[in-house]
Image (tube, rainbow, N blue to C red; front, side, top):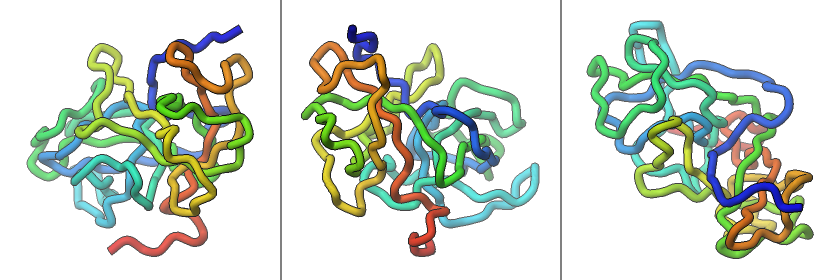
Length: 201
């Protein structure tokens, strides 16, 4: 029986949380930052009110981009107070717009919904897939949850696709339909802390 109607929720930690670390969100961001949002390493370190921290990339949506860190599990403002999300253009303290806790272990598993544009076949388990975000990487304002999905029309053996498809949620319909979108368990194939990733300058 299909149990997951189309309702995007970003990348939710699946199983054990292997590791989570704090990252800074640079001031005057270009994209929004929500809970359960896949983020990219920004290739820089900032001196913040809470010490030196790596930053996330904010110039554009993370789709089809290497250097994935993981997905956000908590979002804070510039005072380290919890907030639902950080809106694009947020200035914060003029250095950072806020901070995020990221589940950033390269072996971390996540559960994410496909967009069902071209429903992913069960036989595609083990293939790679890209992320699909809106232009500003939006989420649900009321909950602060990301609306990112898997780009189901970008599934192949291509090494540079961002996510590794492991298996669908056991309660879901495969392939997806226009009403029921399959949730997949994935890891990040192009992870910043992966063994074969080039450095980011």
